[in-house]
Image (tube, rainbow, N blue to C red; front, top):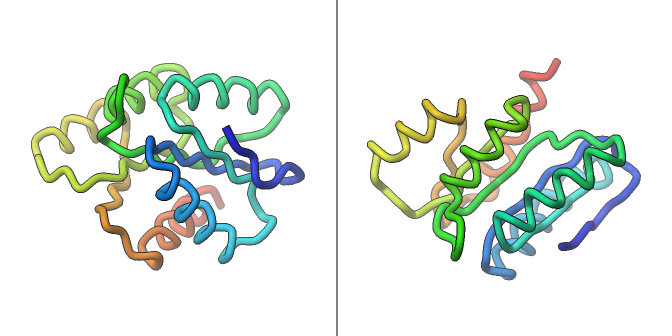
Amino acid sequence: MTALKKESQDAILFVDDELLILLSMSNQVKRNFGDRFRYLTAQTANEALELIEEIQSEGLRILLVFSDWSMPGINGDEFLKTLHKTHPQINKVIVTGYADQKALNTLKTETNLKYILRKPWEEFRLLEIINSVLEERQ
């Protein structure tokens, strides 16, 4: 678990079993949004769920969770379904190269998923998703 910034009241969580992807995504967002958010990473779904509870107990809000689809243990789709049951207000993004539209549609229905970030992602799309979530909050 890595926390890159502690002062912000809003957090963005990146969940992926590949450390390079976690660092790349969080660094791209931090480079564009600076200290506006607290940037968090987890390499497993269980680690992410524990981190979410810890962060919320500190009074912070999880604005957005980016989760890889294919991870060891609990896949991203199951993680987002579990997260939605306990925290339906958190915006969720599945990050995937996985192209099964039926599975994506099911995930959208079961988790109120609004965003899919395809691998390899474009930085502008990553930032566009965050900006869209911010606009919806206003």
